Image 1 (spheres, rainbow, N blue to C red):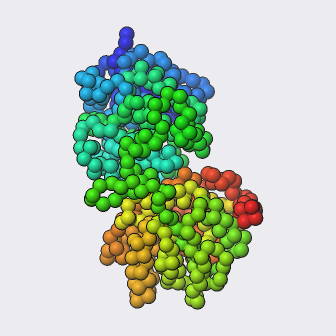
Image 2 (tube, rainbow, N blue to C red; image 1 turned 180 degrees about the horizontal axis):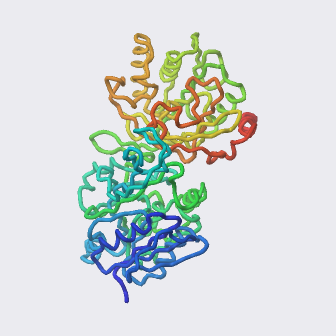
Image 3 (spheres, helix red, strand yellow; image 1 turned 90 degrees about the vertical axis):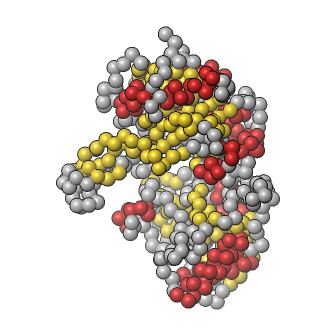
Length: 555
């Protein structure tokens, strides 16, 4: 019997696979089946015994891409939809996705993404007081009664309607990015709208179309870059990719330590293959180059600048003059300082470098201030550098941060916002202990010169008159008036590879190696510790990171 749709569910170590399949079965309204691939594991909970459910079992994992391809080969349906094994769905979602194809509203060369909500799967309930905490890793201590008498998982399984995603994109490094601002364009005010890319957690298309675009490219590895791959294949083959706002799916995001992805992290392999495939035009079925997508959706953050009400004006990275303002108190270990300066030079690519120091140094155009080290002095150094830098866009660079070259490839797409690279690891110089958490730091700040000039003039005047207070913070844009100094927004972005904030004992701000060292747990979301930093290699171990810094200084 040929079904109308097959839903492909690759699953590895998935504790919510049963919930996902039951949710699908309770919400489908077309002739739809589920093909689930148990990829190297046996579920702890029995799966639904239903003629609409087919199971494929592998004792050894073949990877998310391989499992999806195998399920597609097993299908004989007209349409296929791939979804993750931790999702919930709208009533009649399959019918609502199929109908535009059957009516001719969209053609058979179209990929469809349902609109997405975050999925609230469960809470942790304290057995002592009954207080519930939002899903995440197993809780050790109750935030309310502070007891450790144990917690039980209480199922919720509801979409978070306040966390909706319709549009996404990829940046210059082909890394997934949300694209909320795209909704402001008039062409998106329809039920079925073009979309540049997606997260890759749920997409559907005719099965023959999937065959025609060669399925999923397993040379990427198990997973990673799936949304970019599907988007590039959809558009560059001469087809189309759309979001269908008439229906939705809800997806569980697991981005915390011990609450992460069920498949091993693919590292940089998937990204490198993706970049080589699309940047270098190596997919043989492409009718257009990658630039075609960029031009179609222009202006795109990281690719173009968005300008005035007169309309978008493409201002590419080559036409924008970039600059670097580097500031130092000259108390730093000379090896660290030299290594960090060389990293800046490696990524600067001819950008105008202005250094402001408390003693003369030979780095860029140097200016010295006869002042003592202090927070106000640091702000004055920044202001001096901004005043003397003649670039359109300025990166603020600290003397003890190893900047990856990908950091300087970013192009801010708004003139009235502060942009923070949140891809930063903190590494102890002596031990190589490495910690990551989501944070905005001045060392990762990039913005247009005029905006930075306006802000730091206000900041220096304010701190000179009133002294420094954490009420206004260090980071422009992270506090609005009356705490903050202006109303401009802070926008996050992530470079392809992280920067390293070296913690060496002379930092102006304290080092933190445990989550309980933060005043608020909201300040250390995404906390992770590791023995190695992506793109930089091993750091953990006595002297290992010191040797890395020394090689960079002398290289």
